[in-house]
Image (cartoon, rainbow, N blue to C red; front, side, top):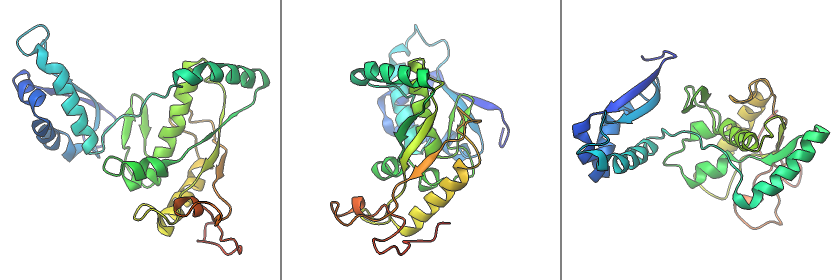
Length: 251
């Protein structure tokens, strides 16, 4: 199965359910033994817990075992994209907005920041995934394979639009970028340079897995570092210093 296009369904034995349900450590050991060694070159489509187990003596173990296995999968960076959806307080507004955009054939503009997701959860999101540097798919969501977090975030918006029958509204990324300082070790000139260079190459070449033929127009944030903002990350998104000297070569 290594390197093939076939997706694997991996099953947990019925007799293993009690320990997996009662012990997060047991779930972690199971994942480390059966999934982690293969996650980079085997496509796992499903993990099933038990066979013909409900009803039965192990039925009450299924739900807690599912939760522990899922947490263990997240700990090794194996997780699915979240299906995007607008919140209850915004869905009515977004229906009205997208209805106008559909009538006028105009795009919607959204901000996409893999940096914030990575910096807030580096245990589960790798730098390679966040900076377009992964050579193998990190997330497989049905037929969609995600090599980078940017595509996953854009497609979360696409999914949310589809849920309100606005999947034909094109997305423009109005802001994305990577700061060079202010939150070490996640911010650095090498990280920012890698992200923005790879971003340019990526969006000029292809769309997202959900919309492969739709090139995503993208704006890099920002042109200049802004020394009048709050100190830290917010001052350090620029491609240039205020004196117009490049922070790093990009083009």
